[in-house]
Amino acid sequence: MDQYQAQHIGVAMAGMMGIFLFIALIILAFIVFLFWRIFVKAGLAGPLSLLVILWPIGLIVDLCILAFAQWNVIPAPPAYGTLPPNYPPYPPVPPTPPSPPPQL
Image (cartoon, rainbow, N blue to C red; front, side):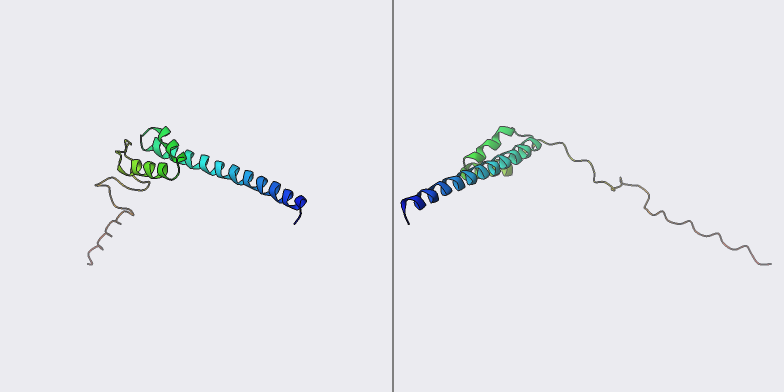
């Protein structure tokens, strides 16, 4: 392998590393966005998600915060299709058929 080929391989490797770094930054930004949304929905401060940048210690800290913190959220409404207590059953019970008239 001569100098010319070694130089081209070096340039190709540098280009691939740049692409890999760009993809890693996009993935890291997406993970921070996801954690930000989770922290906000849990009633906690969204910027806590920036700890994920200190990979992997920050991720462990974030997961511990989410696992052991008191979540300040409003209780969810009842699930769609559930009925309140003492509600008549569905389908309604059919009425009892009338008794036949007396035979003469």
